[in-house]
Image 1: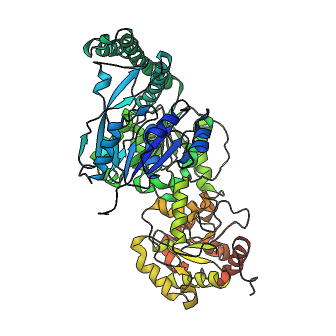
Image 2: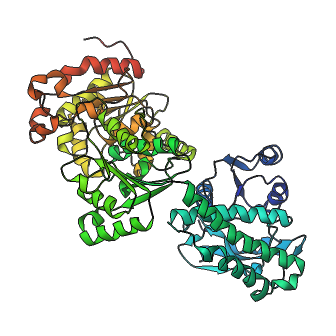
Image 3: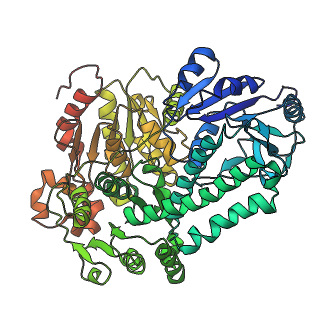
Length: 612
């Protein structure tokens, strides 16, 4: 706001920086806020920060790659302007004055670059490519993010930028051995990046490229002016290039590269993630990628068993040309194995064109053309949604695997944001029940008047506050249910809690006492978060497939077939899809209110014991 001083947050990601951390924190002490994210250092770095710099906001997060670690850290900043210097970089006094003056001037630029002077063995390197280096270190967090690269991550800037006048000092390495070890770390990360891109090694990678890197830095960039120091640097840089391809060859030879496909809805994508989890246990060194629709990404985000999400779009599904281009792009990734949990014609084509040595899918009349191995699904077995997916994994691993329910992985900052949001809307000292008042469409949603009766029953038999969960396009239907509720129930309902995206909804769900309502993605997400559920199945959905974790009263589910088995007479519920709306009229609260009362009593604080 104009008239108020602009503040800046200093950010850092660190690992084993006990030799640097004090000088670094003193150097950036002019910032209004300092945030440090440590990758679980094994030296004294955390203890130094906590004991000697209590004003520093200190966090720890397992390191996955530089881009992810930096983007995570950016979100922790309280101020829009941030500066992201490394622990081995030092800002000169003139540089500090320039940064402060630039930020206070309310500049039009979204980011500023700084020049870096590299020091080696206590002296700066001169006339060398290192000192041509420019890096974006000061920027607005609202307009910048780091690219999705494992190493040499780049800042994507939405707006103007310029280079500041004063260079910073970069003490990137203490000595020759330190420099070598750091370059080898980058070699490993670069090899992993190449591996994910499907790069294969050849003789030029081990000969011409390392030699040219040495020649470039030592001769073309005048590194020889630095004497033996320049020779050491050029030699290590050449060796760094050589080793990245050694590591890449090891990855290609030792690790499997597996693609799991699940193109459908949220519940399906979450369920199929168990394949990725299982494969990680069996092949810890494998690269496991997961192909999903973009809108389902939030339920598998941060899953440590998934290396890369491959996003498929509806436009690619509908266009034969776009589908072919996508399949050819998959082929270039050189997957060893493709496991297709979707097993429809479009995913079958992708599996076929992938070029994978092994392709696995479900057995249908047309799928033998697409897959090397097929699994025969049996809808009559319990928990078939998970069991069938485990059978796909077993078809590759050759071992019997237990069907474990998937998990959702939330970060602490997401949980804290949800807690803050709820505290502003409701009394968080009371239980909170999310009511999944609508399914994905009408034939998966209990009729409005009957859903309102359930809301009334929950309100009468608990002291809980109620959150209505529905899609934005279902707002009118949700309002209809609300209007059917009794006035005293309406007072307990938070109808219009605005959630910006699915990830935010998941975080809010994680803070709920229970979820009650129509079967669908919300129920499966609640189970993955270990939140108790009471599920109402649509008359045409097979309860046996998705009725998971119901061994105790923590998870309860009801289906019309439980009360009118004669209607189904051994037929698959899917055969009753066209009759779903009519059959729903039979699924009334009186049939299952005892079960619902028991669920409330055992999982939610109640004012008194339920009495018929």
